Image 1 (cartoon, rainbow, N blue to C red):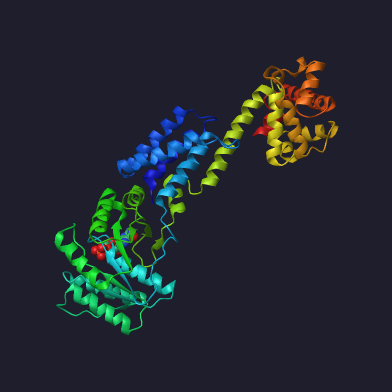
Image 2: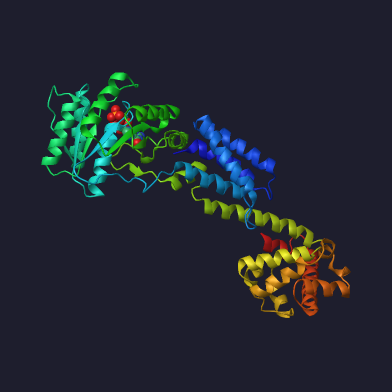
Length: 445
Ligand code: GDP
């Protein structure tokens, strides 16, 4: 489900996450593509606009965390916003079916999957919630529809109201109500007639049924594949009948998932369930976070961020390696290494990246580096000027004093750090001389 939208957004985010830093322009460009993707996925224009605006506002204002790129940040914001738009209040899939017998009115156009969904939901209520359910078909125009519900009822072991020829929908609804009360049913479901399109006669009929049944839930069943039409249908039914929720069917097909987004944004009604096939168990609770993940085509956003980060780090490492092998290893590099170590939880992480460093660490003063020390060393580097970081040899005694004081440490600590940088630099040079097949290169693979 949602393949089209997934692929589009996936492509956009692939590009985003490969960049180290994003300018405001980049964010805007990316969001333009997100907008196009949303429109192609049949999200309505106002909804797409509104969505992009919300994301842009959040993306522009948001502080970019050190450990993620702005691209990843945008992904996260898009993801969170999708959930915000998709989510309704309360438990997903929750139905108000207290005070038995609780009536559930099923409405929708013909062919949307109303009868199938009625049976699926009855089965779910029976199996999952242990409710005693009665189903009644009100489709007096199509005897086949009544029989269809009866057959499905037998299949899932749920009672159906006996068919009485010549009865009108309102009379059937009343009979269902009486039967449900007498028979001790928890829930009774009214499967109303559908039409190929919305017309006055249909609406008047559903309205009359609604008035006698006084339903606790009125669920609109719409074909998720019809995109914008599904949203218009929902608007129509809601303004005339008043719906409490939506069931999107055929979400197992390669539908354009935008319907879900527009549906929620336009009608304000929760999508309670999605139909995922013709079988009786192919009904699922609508889960906003899961659907948002699917829309993004990234299933699990956390996994994506991690993956993107790994790519980025590999690229960074490669760039660094190129410089190191030329004998360039300054305080900026050391700072990056120290930060890396902090992130990886100390010396071990670094060992895996730089073979030979283990031996060095033992030789170096201040072996047994812990987090506190790493932070102090980073603070020392931070108190240096840009020039000094790039070229620490230029440091004079007076500057050393100032730098150490600036970081709240002794000159001896700074000297240790400088020695460490020199040793690392030497080591890198040696590794660089080993050439293309060298140790460092191998280790970076
Ligand atoms: P109604 O006219 O609205 O009552 O529609 P039906 O319940 O008769 O369904 C019409 C067709 O759609 C049937 O062949 C169903 O099996 C099929 N259908 C219903 N829901 C789904 C769904 O979620 N996925 C798929 N693939 N088919 C569905």
